[in-house]
Image (tube, rainbow, N blue to C red; front, side, top):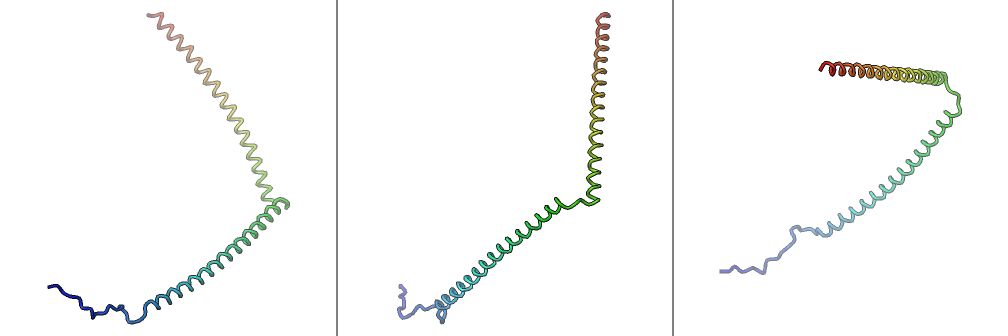
Length: 133
């Protein structure tokens, strides 16, 4: 009771058209588009590097011009006033530091005297306690 295979049945491709040819055509189209995209990408990269170099050159020229002009042109009234105010501020700040230094020295001396006085008083109190005992 074994079933026998009918040798008259032919195995055919599922589509009636030639898919291998269509596949090759699609692969050729894909390669063509890939090549075009690579050419465009290469062009974009070269243009971007060219524009980047030009932008760096222009930026360098502008920065150099700014530095040179600031070095040689006279200062405006606002800049002179700001510099004068900065110098006054520095002078006042240094005086305040000196005052604080003198104040700190006086305070240190006062603490030293107070601690010395307290030590002497403590000695006298201890001596009096020993006499009483």
